[in-house]
Image (cartoon, each protein chain N blue to C red):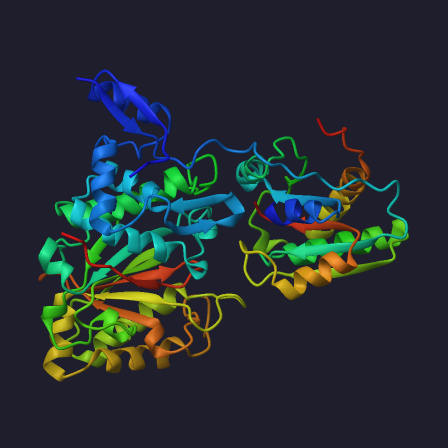
Length: 81
Length: 332
Length: 96
């Protein structure tokens, strides 16, 4: 998450992909960085350790995430307060 | 001496304790009230200004000062003279290669241990013998706890927030012990790591697994060492590009194993070399794994513990190096 | 007797001098996609698969990939420079 925030600060729109079990720390880092409502994506499936993903599962995850990533990278931000 | 921390006023100790707990400022156990007078005394004794920076965690926008460390050391129940050891432990943990962000946030619930070497062990009565890894010894209990309170309160490693440990560990309340330097002529850990014997140091290591190499039957150094190798290899030690060759594993050699090394004249270096050559061999299967330790001295051999159980305890590392820092003498 | 205890924490979280997030493009066409893999498990393979998907559908101009030296550290400065000088949009993953 911190890499995503740093990239944003460098002017590069970024989609951060987070494992379900680490959403809490991703939210915490976003909050600490001053972007409490920063949107990111959750790999919710398959709910197993990443080390044993099969190639088919990797492609399924990629196919699920790709449109979400596109949407997130193109979603216009609200004007700063 | 001006302190930066916000003061909170309470009618009595019970009210303070309840409020500190409600604010998430304790590890669940009672704390000693960190009054300005006590905190100033700790800082004065260590010769530190409150705003002296001990380290930082950039990903968490955290800068840890001497004042932070002193407040948490008071809360942990430290005696004032222990504070330089807490300062050294915080500095060691916040070394870049100590990898605070990972080792205190990981799902694996990695634990930080503080190993004390040098003269302060005997001056303070830091336990290194029977029962040394457990409760009952004030410096062990409070120095280790102080580091963990800094990690919690200052570095924001709070369960459910940045501490994501699936199970965590009771060893995270406190884990501090000393090397039994008098047990043999083994070169103490801090001397092996480049410090003078008359200096006192802390070595902070973050570990994922606490594994006993129990061998009650072997009666030779080779057989005992082979048991240690087998246990290490049953877990394996990974690594990555950033950790490089300087990764560490800690082997706490218990008295019943140590006696054979003394009898047969094995030095600490002999044991390190024997172990390293064998843990470094390629894996032969899922229960016999390569251990990514770059050189023999990366195996931190420490003598400790009491008689009875023939064990060597292994601290299998998380993603960090073990870091040693000198304990600056207190200004008594 | 009243007791005055000091706050042992590093203070309130967030706030302060917040920098701005990057403005979003209208399309991914012509963008250079940066990938930051933290090396955990098969996350790098997942990012590669996403990049292949986007290359096939969104007319990207290229991909710049960085694999971090360890899970929870910042990319190496050389990799960071390559990323920030080359990429115009990015994906990071994955972890917390």
